[in-house]
Amino acid sequence: MTFKVIVLGTGSAKPTLCRHHAAHVLNVHEQFYLIDCGEGTQLRLLECGINPMRLNGAFISHLHGDHVYGLFPLLSTLGLMGRKTPFTVYAPAPFGEVIEGHYRYFDTNLPFEIIYREVDTRKHALLYENTVMEVWSLPLRHRVPAAGYLFREKVPPLNVHKEAIDRYGLGIAQITAAKRGEDVELADGTVVPNGELTYRPYEPRAYAYCSDTLYSAKVARLVQGVDLLYHEATFATADKAVARETGHSTAAQAAKCAAQAGAGRLLLGHFSSRYKELDELLEEARAVFPATEIARELSAYDIPVKRTVEP
Image (cartoon, rainbow, N blue to C red; front, side):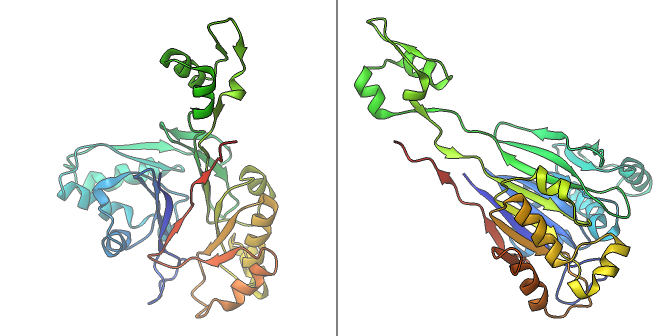
């Protein structure tokens, strides 16, 4: 039951030789989702061995080029590869106008449908769900409308304790009822509460992506208990005035968000090109939230299964 993030780019607006533009891939139970798509993303996918045909869709945080310029050539390549299944893009307005204008002149005969879902950046709302996961929008504070995304695994189905099956001699129908959450009536009329029969095999996991944004106490509340938080850390504390002017966070502010959220781990990214080394940012963040890491490009960050031990 895979739940991991692959970081493709950790840079900000100005490109450097050592950092690429923003893009992540989230693998949830072998279903792949793209989060932001800066310039060069399709090349990074090749470098880390991810087949772009496996992408179910993309979640775009905002319409600044370092977060979206890579999407158009990626979609073109998917057309060349013969994709037939629709590709859904979640993004703030006016992305629909942007992509419509692009395909008026380029790639006019793509063999698959592009479905656009507008994200209201003012709301915390359910955007997408399937059998294993939900995706929620997070209102961010940037110079343009921007949304973060919370990817939350669904609560798994109930399992029945083997010991309970043996003790009560449960049949198939009774086991099925217990898995539905029902109490079970035995042959002698005794009713066994569901809580004595069942357990959840694991706890749901969650990943939050927050870029680009000023520090937000509201976001910290919305991602309470998240296992892994990716939060932009464009600047060091010494440049906090620039961070505020440009709608970005410092590493210490990212750590403050993680601490208030009770996050399991914090990944820092979206670094300004002015910083050649990132030790200063890491130290400032760890002083506030020790479980902080610098996001490394082409690295995978696994959120392991939290098994529920049978009593």
